[in-house]
Structures are given as C-alpha cells and as structure tokens.
Amino acid sequence: MRTNCWCLRFVRVASALLLFVGATSASAGFVPGSIDLGFTPPGPPPWAGTGGPPPFVFEIVPENPAFATMDISEDFGGLDPLSLRISGVTTGDPTIEITKDVTNNSGLTWVGYEIGVNGGSNTFIAGTASSDTMTLLSETANLLSFGLPSPVPNGQTVSFTFQINIPTTGPFQFDLSQEAIAVPEPASALMLTLGVGLLCGRRRRVVVSR
Image (cartoon, rainbow, N blue to C red; front, top):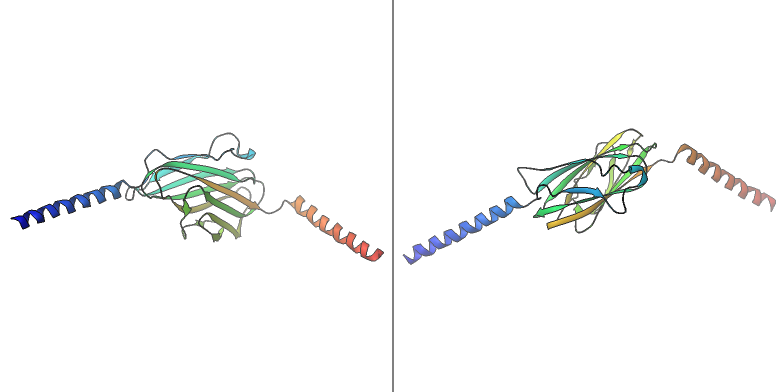
C-alpha cells in the first residue's frame, strides 16, 4: 500500500508540473492591445509633418502566441533619419516580425537603406532580414544595411522584413531607426565636378608659375 501511495503521489506531482509548464508555454507572448507605435523624442523630421506616427497592423499568431507580426506603412518625403518607438507588454520571450513598406517621395533615387534597433537587449534575429527590391549587404545584432544592385527611384515603394527578439517579461520598449541613402542631386553632382575641376586647374597653374 505504501508503494502504491508513493506512486500515486508521484503521478500527481508530475501531472501538476506538466500542467504548469503547458500553461506557461501557452501564455508566453505579447499582451493583446498593449502594442504602441510613436516617434522617438524629440520627434519626427520636418518632412514627416504632424499627422502622427505611421499606420500599422499588429497581429498575434493564434497557433504561436510567442510570435507576432507588425506591418508598418511609411511615406518618406526627405532624407532626414526617422526613428520610431515601439513599446508593449510581454508575458514571455516573444519574437516580432516587422514588415515595413516605405514609399520614396524624397525626389531622389535611393541606393541604400539602413535600419537599426536600439534599446534594451532587443536584437535582430540573424538570417531573417530581406527586401523585395534591395539587397541585404550586411547585418549585425543591431543594424541592417541594404543597397544595390536595385535602386529605389522616386515614387516607388520598397519593402523590408526582419524579426526582432524581445527577451523580456513585462513592459518593453525599443527604437527602430532608419535612414535612406540617395544619389546626389544633379545640381550637387555638377557643382562637385566643377569644384574638383577648378581645384585641379588652380593647382596646375600654380605648378606652371613656378
């Protein structure tokens, strides 16, 4: 009888542990309704206007509460860096996959684009970054660099997708920095060429005068 009681007690303890682990796994993820998107202080660049942060859609994957997707639509009317602040609450160690659709309305052709994550221990997950137009040139835990061979002309939209690990239980916050790299304006390129030409001519005249 003692052996049977011990076995029964062991089964009950094991069942309780399994239920606890199952409940913890099921609850790990993001707290619904807690995600917020805003501008990083001191605020957006002048070209972003005052219409508030860009629209976004946040969804938690039903089959995997520890994984969520976030789609952000942006309209870039200049080249000043833009930083967004993403915050929320987690109940575990979740991952968020962000897709950014960025429309180039800067009047210039983009030849590069950089995206950074700053704040806390939040980092990009290696091997998850991609773009529908540009090529991923390099990646670190906190910086993604995209570039040629495919430029983004004015008026075109480019998409970027990447995943970020949020090793936090409770409130979290990180800044998503981004900056487009454009080819020089025709006038600027012409002035640069003329400047180099004048400098070379001046140096040539100085040598001759000697």
